[in-house]
Image (cartoon, rainbow, N blue to C red; front, side, top):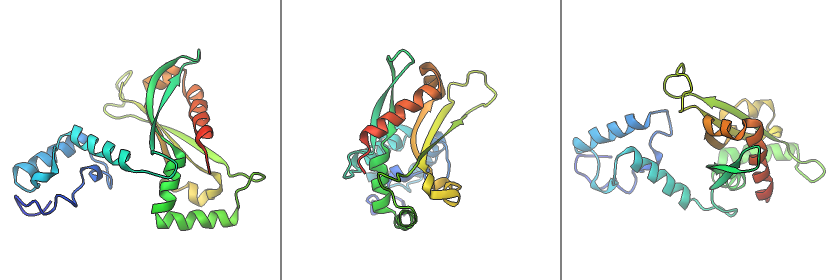
Length: 205
């Protein structure tokens, strides 16, 4: 952003970063961008300003975020109780994500190595992988069979102790899956083992 009709800010303005510091609905974000654009406060180089444009910008940023352990995102085929794949869902691979955070977030890096010094991780005393799920209801929470209900799935390390695990930013996102898809598979008791099996296969610490 900047002065009206100015292109000087296009290189520093990122659609992918919009709405990250505080919650804003995608329709509200698109409406704000539209009004700013009509008033001439957005540079011509910003590209599209719709909800789809913001989503595409975030997807491009994820695709371009390379780690030594591969891409952050991958697709998992969710199976039902009969072993048949019935849904394809995107997940955030914990190994590349953790590597990226340790490498680029100085504050977390200091915290992590302090924990590692206090409780070294080894084959004899491995760290504990802990998981958490929370159902998110957008729209009308009283609506029967709300199709927008989602299960948000997170993970962390038990060695972060109570002080660490009480902090929201030390629970790392694994996936957000519509509740209807989770139910199709047989519930979280069926979905979680599939997610954990995927992580154990890719764990290369």
